[in-house]
Length: 381
Image (cartoon, rainbow, N blue to C red; front, side, top):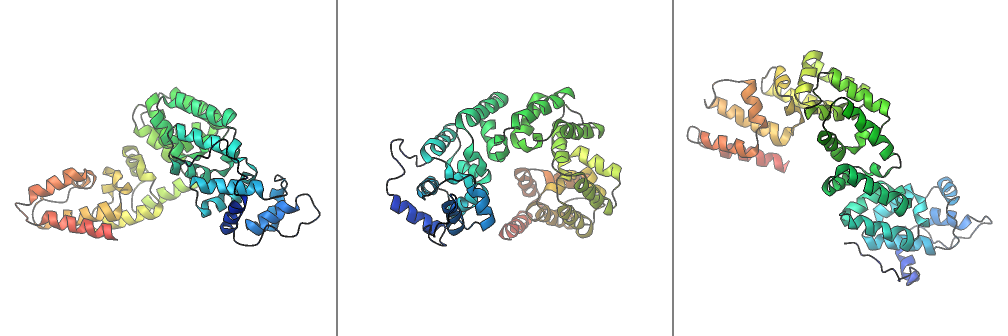
């Protein structure tokens, strides 16, 4: 758990030690730079000399930082270091959210850390959360953090789902999260998506819901028009795929597939079979298609029938298994090249794949060893 500091321990204790620690964190100049006439001059000097702020950014930030001694800022830095933040993380947070230096460690920061610990977030989870969203440091525990957790817990009906969502998307702490989620879930409900499938998307991809209802409805309508069944889990995967990219990115990926000879109808058929095929980057699509068509000699339609292959690792799954597939063909263990059998060959679990090769050992001794060698080679790359 976090190195929680006792409630009755003030941060003025060992002030000299904490200031020295801060100087090591931002080793540029001393905070004793001559003060100018303005009321904010010390804050400006502190941000420029110790935090490395550009002067214009320091002046802008100083409008909200009214301090004339380093005590408060030093105590905040000391608190973060006590909780396990690295110097790089602290520097990043202060740079993104200078108001962090105005927080009161005992009154503002410590209670949030304790609460987040209490709901099941680990030390590293909390560090990642605050590093990703430094502005969250200013959120009220009573009026924002606790109500948000209560809302999410009621929504998910599962603490495990709650923690997964928090870990995967720091944006759920935004003030408009609740206002976005409820109307967008209603859109899914209106087209017949089961609640459990909605929650699966919300758990693993909360960011998908953080748009206006018009934007979300457009994505859902597009998926419906493509012929997806709202009762099937692939419907929500398709919504995620559509929501995760701009229209221009979608069109560029369509063009990439078309450049390999696939028609729009074939691409959309592949998308309906496995929506993840449109989540791969253009570069990944090209690499996989190049290997399957030019190295393995398959027709491009192999992807239409087995679109899930596109999302697999080229080095750790596709190449090792393709080499063994060719080895087995060359040794007469399979009659001919078949798209369906090839799809199983790449997509079956590792356990099933090993068992298949063990069966082949009688007819082609060494086939399992051959595969494991290729696999180990891929792992070392």
